[in-house]
Image 1 (cartoon, rainbow, N blue to C red):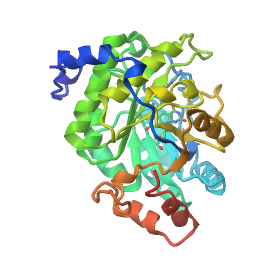
Image 2 (image 1 turned 90 degrees about the vertical axis):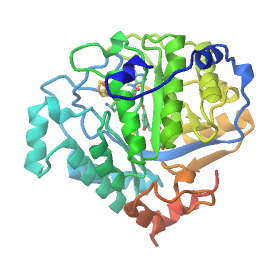
Image 3 (image 1 turned 135 degrees about the horizontal axis):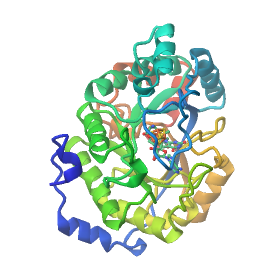
Image 4 (image 1 turned 60 degrees about the vertical axis):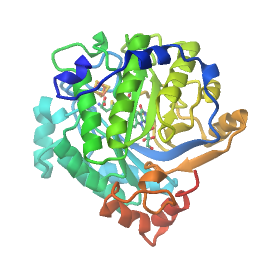
Length: 368
Ligand SMILES: O=c1nc2n(C[C@H](O)[C@H](O)[C@H](O)CO)c3cc(O)ccc3cc-2c(=O)[nH]1
Ligand SMILES: C[C@H]1O[C@@H](n2cnc3c(N)ncnc32)[C@H](O)[C@@H]1O
Ligand code: MET
Ligand code: SF4
């Protein structure tokens, strides 16, 4: 039994022999992937207010500065993205800001929204209207929240971070491994194509990394919803001086992820934070969302590489680079090996639309 999951009634069995096997993995045990993919996105940081205060994060605002992007600002950003040929509207922001900040709650109420989830829903509708497919990562969510948001999202995500109780998540309001696992399970139960990941270098040890990966595998075996696993290295910033894992550590964790997870789950590293070109032979096959128009608002000191650089990375590994949608092909009934009950009518309508956006989406289905 896995103690972090117990409090939520999640029964994750971790076999000691699986942990031992992962602990012995080296990059020599994996083969390079045959191709490398990415998604072209526009980033919409709806609010920097957050109920948590993760010590590695510079994104969250201290009380007194809490604010929200207005619907007009969201629309403006969406148009920039659509004009630049993006297909993904990435909504990532502070966790349940309205729980902690009355000013956020009041602003939302003023605009006619009950909660941040309610507002996110409306902004996803706006994205669909502007010709972009929403991928939302608003942090921890419950099953009813996923049930609602899945209607207007092509895919969603939350980083598990780690199954270990690390000091980086200390404080009385904090991320807990149990709640993160509960979020990943809730997404599966609601049949949401899902992105998760581990954050490397926040105080977890090798066993914790192996257990985190095995926990993701276990939840995926039950629900089939995980499309990709991000191996994200923590990076230093002006608020914290996390050193970040060494290249050797990243190589070993990526190889572990590749060995642990079934083939249908992509292994992603963010090319603005991680040394992607030195990780190709460890099994990565995806570079995640890359934006031609917006910063990585979570790590603004780390610029997105241009498309040219992504091609260089792929060339170096001798593999083709391909653009994909925020939702992977196997969840789309339109693709040859696709399944039908993952994406909702709203998303399927957007994919089938007889307009520029619809054509752009369809040109990326069934290729990678
Ligand atoms: O620009 C970023 N994109 C992040 N993304 C975006 C991601 O790379 C793409 O949206 C997905 O690959 C879908 O295309 C996340 C998505 C998730 O679902 C969960 C976590 C992340 C983390 C980041 C991140 O730190 N920075
Ligand atoms: C959206 C995701 O961004 C990640 N995140 C937050 N702060 C940092 C940092 N300093 N370095 C790398 N990743 C970070 C967390 O994993 C979060 O879940
Ligand atoms: C800016 S962090 C991304 C979303 C959410 N706050 C989380 O940590 O999961
Ligand atoms: S990582 Fe996400 S949950 Fe943690 S403080 Fe930053 S915004 Fe909040």
